[in-house]
Length: 183
Image (cartoon, rainbow, N blue to C red; front, side):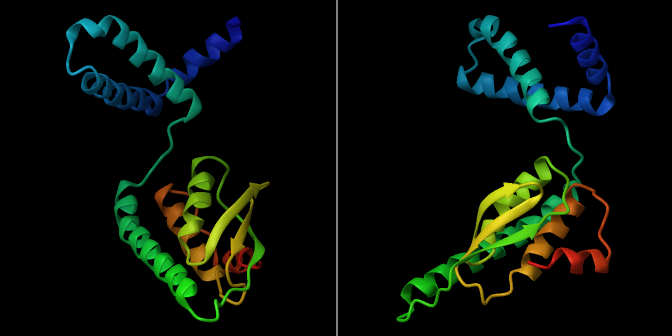
């Protein structure tokens, strides 16, 4: 490693939010090691360096993000509701005698910033009944839908707005929501 890279790494590690994240992740990884080794104290000569290395790698690969924990809790029921509705929708289509599908690919422009929020949105889109994320490229989701006649905009916008609240991102105005909804 060059001197500039090490200096930058030390500077980044000095920030308070990263320090808190290091402590939390380190404790989690320590407990994981403790569980994996059944509390064997002789394993710590390998465990401690492994935990330290794992913690640093996790900070580099997944930098700390700000989450509003209360919003995460409020999202859990919505997650289960969408999961249940999606399962019912697919089951209804499978058992319907005429198999009512009209598959298509649609594009949905994301307003979420690249990173964890976009990845989570990409995964959560599959909860909307009759949808499956096909691709994320240049802040645009390509979504496979079972029936192009359904209105997916409202549900996609609702999920995106919940994620904006969870990650404490600026809320969009009504005009921005309408512009984003064009698929």
